[in-house]
Image (cartoon, rainbow, N blue to C red; front, top):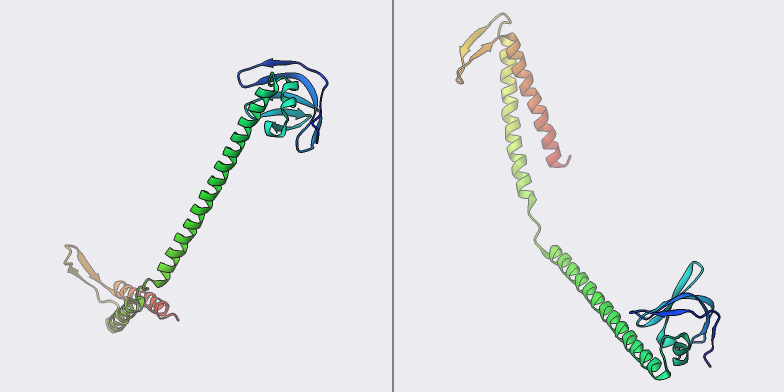
Length: 212
């Protein structure tokens, strides 16, 4: 398709990166057949022409423009340098596309490798021997049953001592820790109740260990 270029207002100034356009409006038909009508040109850089239309905008790559376009816009002085610029822009585009493709391939490869590592770790966890908790649980149960049996005997002795001892009996003896131990009706009752409280806690724990 023949490339057409209509410039409505032409004002441009040279800059380091290309051209800076000031209130320049143009209608440009590209090599792919698309026509940009009455767009405001902003500037040109190393590989394309930046434009704006209201709140939208974009870039037309040199690879989608003819050498005549570049000359007419003042981006290049003649068809030879314009062609040269398009060739360079095309090489840059190919290089960029290759780099992006290479990055995607490497990213996908890394993601696949990570997934393989994750699956491998999961498989190792499945094959790893499970700790045998049954032995420790059974040991705890046996020890707790023995403790309960001993505390039941202690509870019986404490209650018998409380019941059989006259309520008015009281004595004070030296404690092995350097203090004194008081034996009266209140302390005898407290001792029996404390043992029973410990027994209730031990029996709850035993039911938990047995899964009851």
